[in-house]
Image 1: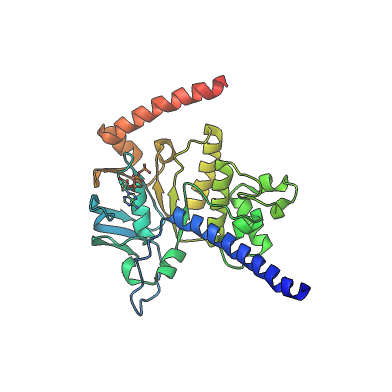
Image 2: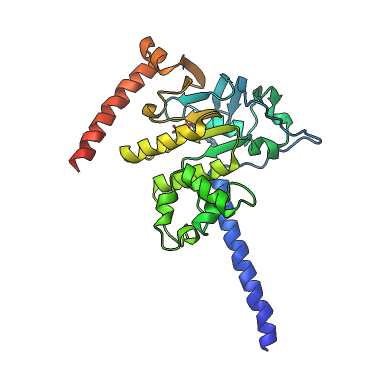
Length: 303
Ligand code: ATP
């Protein structure tokens, strides 16, 4: 009888493992918001990234409901420079990142990387060239070392440690009871928003992509943590083409160009100083956020 039970027990284990895998997969898909309809054309070549220039040429796009979200967007991001996208909630900032990662195809216009239309190349190579630090990182129910190493296949422990140092999360890990073998996720240690973001940064460092998309968290971190994360991100972004989806303008003052989206179009573009001088939408937004920030800092100091 025991012999009969053993395989059943084994099956149960396999089932539980698979289900766990699916739960994590689901979380990933949810996060990435991936529809299945975008497929490679037969014989699509690999994307060849020599420099990392990113261009959106007259891109129009709407989700299934037919509402136009982008109404002819032009972006020209030179290799190794940073472009911040700002604008009111719902303006289509995250949509730009989703289109670049090719979760969707534009309804017209095109997106190129080093002159290659991204809809014509292998998705695998496209996504391999882009690192995303998302708003909210999904952690697997596994060790923190695994969660960092996930950024690249077969990373060594030394590489994981190096990435953790680069993301300034090594100190945090060094005081955990089991160090890199400490369990995190739903059934382990819960990480704060800032710590999770650092795990995402470490993953990205391991992936070492020429193009980086930073989707800034909407949930406010305290201003000290925010500043520390910002310094780490600035370091990671150096020498890579970087698109920053920004909610707080204070994080993007040094961007090489800032694009202000409004109603699906580029309302303004320029550097922080140029846009302040202009006294338009950006300048208004800046004034408002400065006032809010001051109020927050006063409240924090009073705590
Ligand atoms: P926020 O600053 O609030 O994050 P955003 O500028 O990043 O906003 P997007 O997430 O790009 O805005 O969304 C643009 C518009 O598209 C919004 O009106 C949103 O409701 C809509 N939208 C986003 N995702 C989908 C989807 N999967 N299906 C249908 N509509 C969507």
